Image (cartoon, rainbow over all chains, first blue to last red; front, side, top):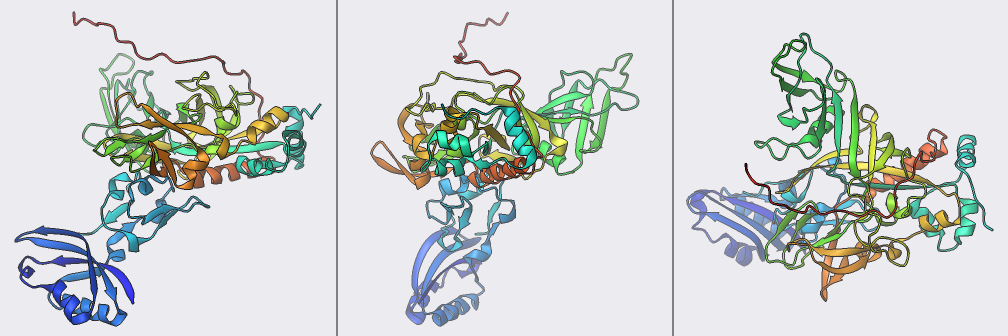
Length: 136
Length: 387
């Protein structure tokens, strides 16, 4: 069993298919919807956490992608200019998901992207503007 | 009677490579086993450091004279307004200055761009005089074309600072970072037991002329910082429990590095600048040894509600509690986060320690000590008629 987060971007004409139903029913994947934005007639974006057998998740992702939906793992959509980070801690103040934390020994920033819920609060909170998340 | 050392003795030991130099964190650990009397025997210098956003910072720049010359009476660097009331081609660019059309780029960014060797657009206007006939100039400058480029910060290295929380229902954007509603986070900014002015709370060794680490180069303490307040309430360890004294510092930006000077933009607040400062404290006697031995459990600070006008105090906590990850405020467990970099402060304390050990940096006796018994005025408003 693995657990992984994906961002799905739906084209305007894909609203009539029950993808999440098929992921559960056909691929035995447990789904947790963490974030959803729908702009009717334009596009929609979803942040999903998929839990299941590795091969089932791979097949489920292929199934989604075969319907012209972009499905990419979350960590590919999070851009963080780590080499410029000064470890000030401002982003950890707003990260209630616990993805951004300070190592309590080295006091350096640790970023566990798998915990990110794309609340996007870190983007303005970083005084050096080092975060970018490609959700839509 | 315990040992007493002089600055000269310590500098002789530094030159000959016999001096023992520790960081304030190392000596705080040592103090769990040794008394101040034993520490003064063993340790000669203790290095302290901080790397936080310090808004009261800026740079003095002399642009050099163009031909024909101009008396610069309005000056912009990459669109950021600079002070124009200093002779013809002298200016001061404040870290927090910015043009209205680009609020996220300010004086601190101009300073950092120059520091990084980038070209910066200088535009200036003058009325034209007999000796300065020119009325306008627009040209690129960089760190090599300008003459003096001096960091002069009127208020840095605050001796302790408050913890910020927000009891209201709405998110608050402050210089202490983003404060979530309903006491969902607490931010703090001092490097605690490593912080310079917490290791010499009575200013026995820090004064006018103290040689320091500033932005990666050698700098100096040149004056008490603005809002220099020495009569704040103190705890049992002689530590003020809220923001108290400060220092004004100066140094040559041409020798500094953007590893230790970093421009910053705080959302819906404005521009500021992270400044790296390290101060060596000579362990002259047992009293100083006791002061530099202070640890995070002995340093307390006030928790203030930044969401409410007047920032009421909600409690008092130690840095040990703050660094544990959560504090208790109004009976509620509140997650803590730093907004100043302890990792960078440690790097600075380590770097300064190396300079001292190598004999390339001396401790200096202040030319003049700072005043005691100072307090602050608020701004009392009196009626100012529009006539």
